[in-house]
Length: 462
Image 1 (cartoon, rainbow, N blue to C red):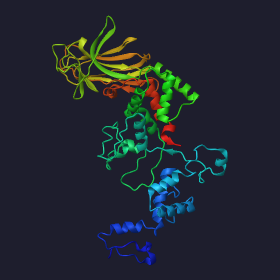
Image 2: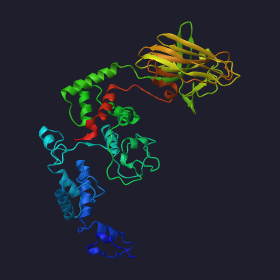
Image 3: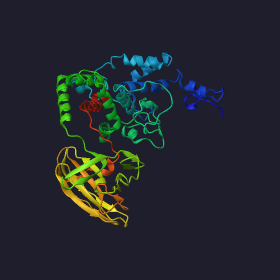
Image 4: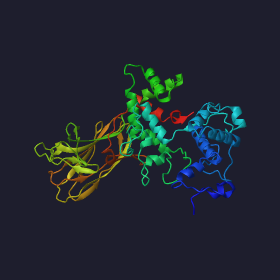
């Protein structure tokens, strides 16, 4: 069989034989040929979709007889004919579309238009277009001043370092393991032909904007660029101009200033620290020194481990347990800052797996209310460590203290307290999750910047 064009599309059903090399170039020339207007129609329809947010043919990859007809057939044919006449120049096609009256329409609606044409088939207004994931991430990097303008080069691992300032276009895509963030924001499945991406609005998208370290980091970067000596109103104006490209209205300034004031007055968010110290029953005070040396998956007081001379001994804390120091003044402590406070239930189980241990002692101490409870556990045993109801004031700290009971021999333990709402039982925070979480209070201006990142005005083209 000879290489030739599709018989069904050839004039008189007699295709010309391909004779040059593999025939691929001749096939491409036959597809992109002035005598084949279907190719020009498909290209024009795709470009129109990208610019106007809605294609002339609803199925860009299927112009068959069983699909919906074009919404504007004469317009589609006219643009296709001009595209061919312009030597298939995409640049000229785009220029003609973006300088048209239809493209320059405002996105605001009005009663007359909604009454006559609610679906906007006549293009009496511009369709609001939501930014895709790549555009959204690049926009955040751009307004924070971090976007790297370099073109081309090797792809980067977005999952390993989300804050890499390169354009998202260059993110590496693993077809077998598409990152969850791409799926959350409707990234096209790389295993299939996808003519148009789906557009969904889900809680996960909003939660990502609020909680992902990337948006916080870029908001911090943007906040750092505000003039330190400027008034609060001037800072609001600068943020609006940078993120939204316009001056705020008077009502927006007032609302933003109220928000900034509320953030300043709000208590610090809940947080966990790991430390070493002890509880004095006489003064009812806790001494606490944060442990910052990480050895594999455990925190220790110093680089020297074990450290018998200082009394630290084998003192360590992990996400779920650890080992106390040599005496009650070298206990290991998890310190929980309560943030907004409330009425909590504290759950947990203290377990000492080694029978040779002489036992350990657990204490829960509130900085404002003193000792809340005390438990002991011998080697080879486990005891529940539960407070049914603990009233913790905003800004209070709660120390979960574990010391040796009768000597530091084989006192490895597991105990990872869980903080729950006393009324609903909902988990509020957990020591295991907070062990590796490095939180820091967010400045009011960074918080406002992050709110603007999540706004519809930033994420939609109008």
